[in-house]
Length: 302
Image 1 (cartoon, rainbow, N blue to C red):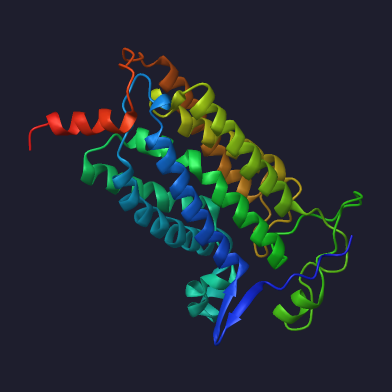
Image 2: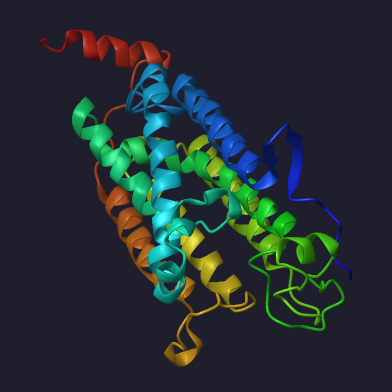
């Protein structure tokens, strides 16, 4: 299949170019913010514990998360996936985020640091804060992988499946100075696989956890489910995704993405086990989650 002719730049506003890649990050953060706020306001989800924090605090947290995604994602790409020789030749490339090059695992580290500081400053339960944040994460991940597809980057390995694509068109040639880095052979559209499983399917699993099983009442279980299933999906899809340029040949066919995902699976299993073993508090009186939390805060000494 030929790769569709999609301009990575959505529109030019004078000298400013609005790219699909940047728009995906902005839309993902905003939509995730609204979704997480909706979780906090939904009193039916918090049957044994009040909502972990208020919608107003979510308005503050989203700024921390945005900085963690962008800063951690970019630094993670530089540290985990970019050869140092390339950085030495062009140090300013570190700051050209709009050209692509963001690491999921780096973003996780950045967002984790942001949540740790936020929870500490506001005296909140870190695991319960994270339960809300990760439930909204797949929205942004789905949009980000679609943007990777539009950019014609992070392509898959060579294959002969009927839906394989040749990641080469006029837009890609224009971006890369007249040639196509992926070559002329058909490859797996691994960006779409990741959008489907790490985005849509993971969102549905977490939606069941929050709304069906109401696992937000158990500390850290939703985080554990997120880590477990993202790690498993990523490890599986890495078998179909072309390793990043400049990566060493790891033993046993491993890739950097697999290596970074294994601790997520282990940590996810531990958090699920821990959260399900923890005694469940008594059921709360029927009331909205937000008033319950406000009342609890109001009763605390100043």
